[in-house]
Length: 444
Ligand SMILES: [Zn+2]
Picture 1 (cartoon, rainbow, N blue to C red):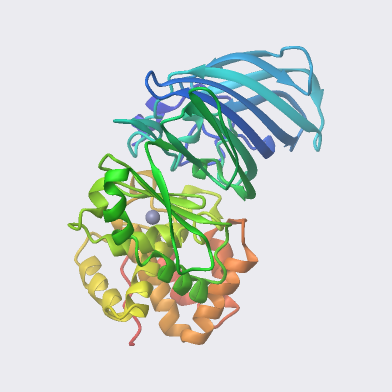
Picture 2 (cartoon, protein in one colour):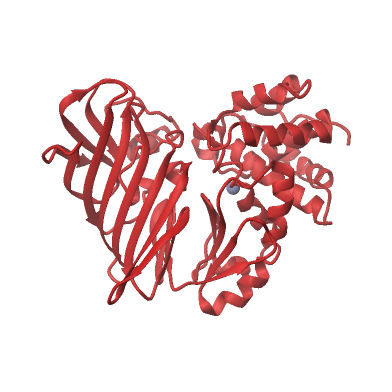
C-alpha cells in the first residue's frame, strides 16, 4: 500500500489535504465557481477546452497549484494579467503569480488546455473521463476530475459550475444542473448546463452518447431518462419505480436537494452504477433483468442526499455516503412492501459476523474505501441507532442532518455530535465507528 501510493504520487510540495488521495487538492485556496467550455470530437477523442476558475486565497500565495491529468496547457492568465508562467507535470499545473496575493484576495484563473483525455489511474482503478464504444462517460469518484478540467480536487471545496460542451450533433450531452441552452450549428451542437448548488469536483460529470431523453411522471421532482433508442423501452420499465422512490426518500430524508434527477443508461455494460450530482449512470447490463436493479436504483438516488448534498471532507468518512445509501436500500425495501430493514439488517449482521473484523468504519484505510463491509457495517450502525433512538427520534435526526448540512461538508465527528442531540447514542456509535469487533444489534 505504502509503495503503490508513493509510485502514483506526483511530485508535489505541500501537505496532502486528504491522505487517502495523495497529491490531490490544495488547502491554499477555495474555488467559488468553474466555467468550463469543452469542444470535443467523439470520433477522435480530441478535446479543446477553456476554463475560468474564480477562487479566494486562504493564505498569502505566490503560486497556484491546480490538479490536471494528462492534458496539455497552452495558455494561462490570472486576474486578466499577461500570460502567466506555468509548468505542468505529475498531475499538477503550477502557476507562478506575477505578484503575491493576500489571504482573502480573489483569483480569476483562465486556462486553455486540450488533448486526448483519459482516466486517472488510482488504487481503485481508472477514474474520470473515459471513452465508451460510442460516446463518453465521466466517473469522477474519487479523484477523476483532473482528467478533464484543472481544479482544486478537494471534495470540501464546493463550487458552482457552468459547463458548455460542443460536439457532433448526433450526440446528446448531459452535464450537472439545468440545461440552459442548446445551440445547433451546421454539424455541431453546444449544450450549456448550470449547476447553481455547490458541488464537489468528483461529482462533476459529462455524459455524451446517442441518447434520447424521456421523462418519468409521478414525482414532484422532474425525473429524466437518457438511453440509446434501442434500450428506451427496457429503461422505461427498469426505472418505473424511480418517481415512487423519490417520494419515499423525500418523506424519510427531507426534500430532494437538487432541481432535477436524471438517470442515464449507457450503451455499454458498466461494472457498477455511479452517482454524480443530480444524476446517476447505469450500464446496459443493469437493466437486462438479471441483476437486482431496484436495490441499485435506490442506492444511487440516496446519494443525492448523502454524498452529493452532504459530502465528506475526507475519504476516511466514506461510510457517511455508502452506509447511508446502503441503509436507504433497506428502507426502500421496507417501505415498498419488501423485507423489513430489520430483517435485512439481521441477515447482513450474520454475514458480517463471519467476515474478518479488522476494519475501522471511521477510518478503513484507502484500500478498503469501497469494501462492502464499509457499506454494510455503516448501514448496520444506522439501524442500531434507529433501534436505540426509536423511529420518531431517528428519522427526525436524519432529516435534521440532511437539512442542517445541506450542500455542506460533513465528518464522522459532526455526525456523532448531531446524533447525540437525539438520545444516548454516544457509546453505541463509538463501538460501531471506532471499534473493530462487530457489535451486537439491539433487539428489534
Ligand atoms: Zn454508493
